[in-house]
Amino acid sequence: MLAVIKTGGKQYIVTPGQKLKIEKLEGEAGTAIDFPEILLVETDDKKVEIGEPVVKGATVSARIVEQTKGPKVIAYKYKAKKRYHLKKGHRQQLTEVEITAITLK
Image (cartoon, rainbow, N blue to C red; front, side, top):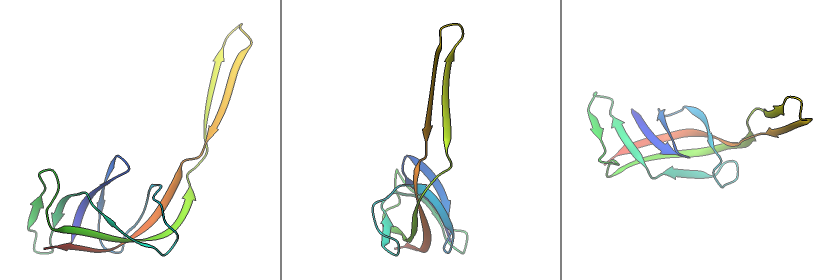
């Protein structure tokens, strides 16, 4: 099975057993979660259900593996001959999830 889910303003193609890092979700490691917005589901016999905008009766279940941070991103501003420079760093908070099941009713 294959599904397209929407979370954190992004869309992901997922399959059971897959691990992926997404925008931060609330919850401890080991907590089970469900994704409410499923945009597309493909079954094992190649039948495709496309949502308008979401597939009714479809669920994607996952388990939170860990809460982590992404790589450090440096933002640097500089203006020549004005003695102006500004350096900022940022690390995005991420949640690693493992897809456990995709069901279509």
